[in-house]
Amino acid sequence: MKVAAAQIRPFFAEPQKNRQLLSRYCKKAGQQEIDLLVFPELCVSGYNFTSKKQAEVLAEPIPGGPTTQLWMRLAEQYNMVIIGGLAESKQSSGIYNSAAIVGPNGFIGCYRKIHLFAREKEWFLPGQHPPSVWKLPSVSLGVLVCFDWAFPEVSRILMLEGCEILCLPANLVLPYAQRVMIARSLENRFFTVLANRIGSEGKLTFTGRSQITNTQGDILIKGAKNRTGLFSAVINPAKAQNKFLTNTNHIIQDRRVDLYQRLLHE
Amino acid sequence: MKVAAAQIRPFFAEPQKNRQLLSRYCKKAGQQEIDLLVFPELCVSGYNFTSKKQAEVLAEPIPGGPTTQLWMRLAEQYNMVIIGGLAESKQSSGIYNSAAIVGPNGFIGCYRKIHLFAREKEWFLPGQHPPSVWKLPSVSLGVLVCFDWAFPEVSRILMLEGCEILCLPANLVLPYAQRVMIARSLENRFFTVLANRIGSEGKLTFTGRSQITNTQGDILIKGAKNRTGLFSAVINPAKAQNKFLTNTNHIIQDRRVDLYQRLLHE
Image 1 (spheres, each protein chain N blue to C red):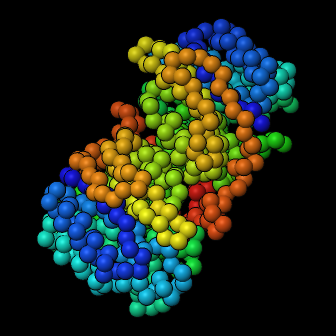
Image 2: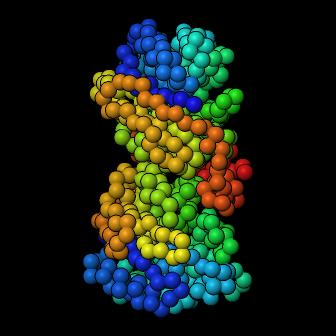
């Protein structure tokens, strides 16, 4: 299976231009026979909103909005799974920092970012559901968004639910997530695909270095700090099903849930 | 505050010789004005037992046994906290893979390893209590032992209980824990002191590279792969009390315990 992170530089508040950009990357990925393509967080709206109103105007429904519909067409055309971050509008008030997951057979699901970073708390509602694993015929996928990296709990939940590849659309400004993805892969024995963006918006500079990591925490490929590109690796996701670290150490069976209650107290 | 990992090469099944070795390291640490000294796992018995009987013979009570008593004298003499791994015997049947914590004013506590690695399951009983934080006047300490590194849950519990420095006596044969300690430090914003041993016992080779990591996941000092030594760093443990990653992101307050219930199911 060939997986890729699309490290792009979106245009702020120019959704049509960005959808053209996404289409070009999907075409390129199709030519490279990519099976799973991950775009960064908020890759159609841009990130650094100046008001809640602005964020709301740039949000779109999932799956009914233009980007998810476009991805569904491209996913079918190129026979790939596409995951990417979008500002998601609902009929009721409030928008989410979400990721859409689509495949060759249509819409698969939507994840709403649980742990909002910095001013995102002003624009977005936090997700109200634990992360899900989408069990496709070829692979079981989990999705988190950006700052969720800092909370080992949500990656762990995905592992317990059978995730083979954790996909992380991101707009990172800190240099931490890449190092933590090594541990997330190691401790959960799944693959991780971190798709970050580059470029600047106002005072924020995004730090690139998209990264694909295997179940032993080895970095398979890493993007540059300030160059766009499609960074891919060939992996066997079934390897993530082997939770034996030694003959007698199974990372799920060895958990001591009887001693972990403290995790659920504030 | 000056903290150190003592990267030693214990003699298998020679407790008296090992206690002499520990005493020399404590003296050296005293001369260097170390405040907190961490020894590896099972640093008096050695690791690679050939039978349960052998492990039991090499075990000793905590705090009544000779090593903890020795450490209490040395901790007073050199005015330091000493943490190190011991095979712990109890009056009732069964032994634990434990760590003793002692300070200038005497015995502080004992941690019993929860997650046993490989053949340790044949020799030891697993710990039956969650890890504790020992709140000393100068610092709040948490202790785990070796393979506990693989379970983010126990580090997280220590963070929630106020741990400023996670001390990890270890006998590592795999190359993973050092990379994961970077994430443990980052995600919990505490310091980590990983004290590993070197040398071989039978088919097992221990991998050194003891490591002290700060709250940003930066490695302050790293030991060699195959050389003994005292590896120290000066740190301000109070920095671990600052759980704000940004002005509006507090890593405890931002946790979503309402969405983490899955962590407590098998």
